[in-house]
Image (cartoon, rainbow, N blue to C red; front, side, top):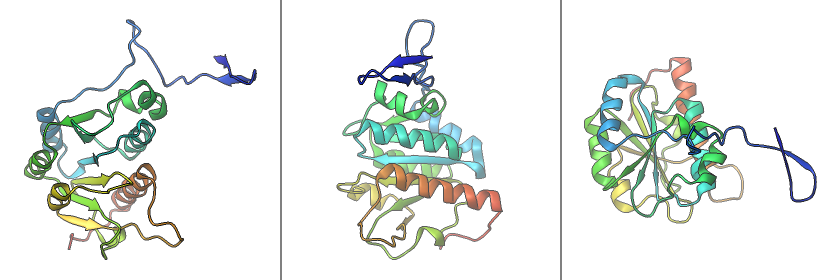
Length: 202
């Protein structure tokens, strides 16, 4: 199916912006308690992406798409000061919004604690720390915690993490876009799990 672009050229329609019988976009739903149960049931294979303060729908959509590709169970965000699942998010996610739920936590710090109780190790990213992403074991149950580009992780979110790591940067820019950083971290977890790496978190 093709649609007419503004410049008169034919543009391919986004087949992933699917709608149901009632004309509503298909979006996966999961509440906080459901997430904790899902994490506990997944055991060693549990993988969750946590986004603290990401407000751009394009970033959230891209993160959802990457989370699905890496096998994440869900994306956890704070209820306030975070982007909701909009039409733009669904379009950018290219189908992932229908299978990877965005769970909105009333209190993110408390939700992180509950995830730890359910069995997750929480690994947050921070540009100023010395520990590299590649020094951490991602083969067990993991929650990857990412902050927005402007401010990074909030204080209580940082304090709730078991480990803080940085993504090594070889160029002149200070940091990566959050969706790109999420992809780097999620696929490092996927790589380790596929390779069967086994070393304990420090």
